Image (tube, rainbow, N blue to C red):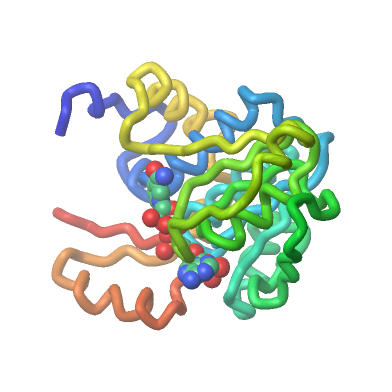
Length: 223
Ligand SMILES: NC(=O)c1ccc[n+]([C@@H]2O[C@H](COP(=O)([O-])OP(=O)(O)OC[C@H]3O[C@@H](n4cnc5c(N)ncnc54)[C@H](OP(=O)(O)O)[C@@H]3O)[C@@H](O)[C@H]2O)c1
């Protein structure tokens, strides 16, 4: 591992909390940090989080809510609705019921978004995000494609922020972990990380992921 990736655990976090936050939490925090640097204000309106029941989505909902944003979640899991509301989502949309429309600009619905799925969802977000809103593009759970036009960028001044948790300059990495230990510290980590498995249990632990029944994150105990 490159030396610049190694950083001290910021107090009051401990080893378990850092692993529970993990790359998913770091990536969600990096997205929120970049959106805020770019002027995202809780007073501007609702933030949509897609892929909501996954690790990044769950932690993003927790942190955004803690920062005073009203968060709407998109999930494909009806059974996840109480969990997502418990984390702070004011509403949960079923991704299969979204009418994506086809116009270059659709009715404005979101002040900003954190997108974990890409494809049609991300294209729809560019068409429905408010003036100067920020969309953080994190994942590609649905697709790597993005088909949109320049109109949302030119006529609404929206911002598409690419989030890369690996190639993060050290100073920014330290700043984001500092925030993870303070104003972005997840409030409901125990609800998000409900499973700890040993290395020996790893193979069977993936079964629930393949069945799409897992919510949140699993910590792996290596010693
Ligand atoms: N940019 C970076 O640095 C970075 C860092 C970490 C992760 N990632 C990427 O970010 C994404 C999320 O990571 P994660 O750790 O949260 O993954 P995860 O725990 O597997 O969650 C992904 C979520 O996406 C939704 N989903 C799955 N298949 C889908 C489909 N076909 N269409 C629409 N939604 C679908 C599901 O949520 P619902 O059932 O609730 O909809 C699922 O729980 C992944 O693509 C991952 O590779 C990127």
